[in-house]
Length: 421
Image (cartoon, rainbow, N blue to C red; front, top):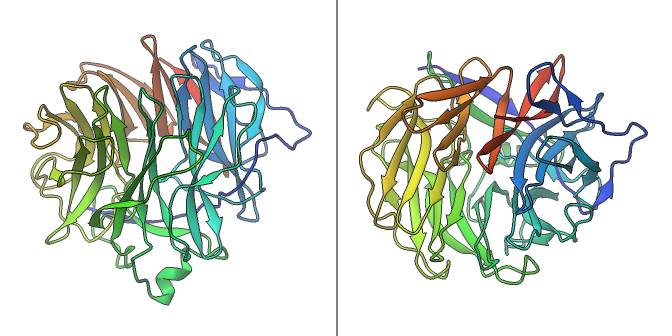
């Protein structure tokens, strides 16, 4: 296996809902490829897309624009079902330049049954970051001042976050939290506002590991809001020794059972997907369950969380692994007892790169090899399509159509696109 060292940087933080401050209007550009539209404007360096849809079928693409001075801003662009843009992109963070984001930890966006739009993001705060949520009640035209979700005060890193909304409007949030993690000066400097960003180890399974020390293990925390994101519950720690640069996931079903997933660091540096569930709306959680013994042992971080999808009768999990227990690639597993136990894992595809996948019912979206995004129908991937030169995908399904936001490299910068399949 080869562990490739990556320096991933990001700078994202803000407080607002201002239209784009640019003389150049954003007019999405159609690609020669069928049903692909460029979201971001020229002469910018956008990345980290997230996508959601409201009950009327409108599509929202959030993305982060990175500036040369390492500052960053979070924008959102609205589209109709035919990928026609609606209005100009809107800046979500009211205070310019304070967003912190990188490829492994994009913003999260979701829409409530009443069409309210919620965006979770990380904001710089001194030598640390805060996990915040911004809310729009007018279709993404304006956003409220962000609400801080983590309830600690001392500077610390809060990220790798996830967001979900229940049918009753309750907002559920999970994230990795370093309030209790001691870091030496070298490691702490990676979080500072002056530093270029986080240093992580990336897997591409072809050779020796980098000798660079990875981040120390983190902890996973959870909170919920019952007032539309105006305030959040006391933070609840769910686990320690968590892989520090693998995204969390949170979801809920129609019975208000809540699920949170993360990548647990086990004895011997095995890094496996874990799930914990709550039967009382997030008040308390049952002990975590390891989804599969993949035998993936590495003293590094794969930058790869899981996707989870729940109904009242079952929980499905999709994740990447490169353990000696089988072929490297994406796998699924199912629980029919509320996440207490999981059936045998099912191999999905070895045409894969480590990353955080998306699970949309029977549709699976994940990072393929050679900078491609793969859209597969069913765990056996019998029906499959790809998008070339497409990285860091985010996806949502509307009336049987899959909408995918992704990053495309353009010379020395990046661009954000949306496609439908």
